[in-house]
Length: 102
Image (cartoon, rainbow, N blue to C red):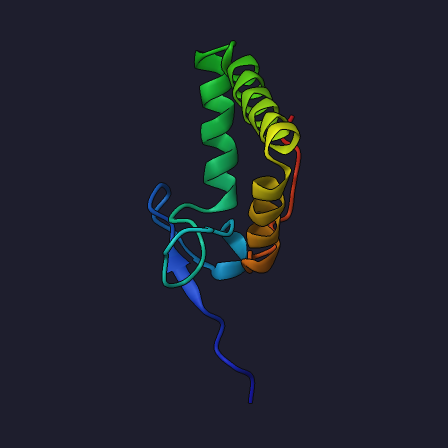
């Protein structure tokens, strides 16, 4: 006898899919996955890129700002940075598959 596959309904397309079809959610969701499936997420990002061509540049700039802030913290306050890194390493996070969308 096989175990039943856990499923969830996507909030965007309304289809019931297995949990493996949903990206992980690192917040406080009970099931540990997003409310939308990977397919809907990819299509919404593609639509967003079409509507806002500067979207990728804005994402890149925000990520660069976060990275600069972390490096500044590491240089100025190495002990606080070490504590932050240890906390990040200690907190369990689900592994996300990183697929690149064209």
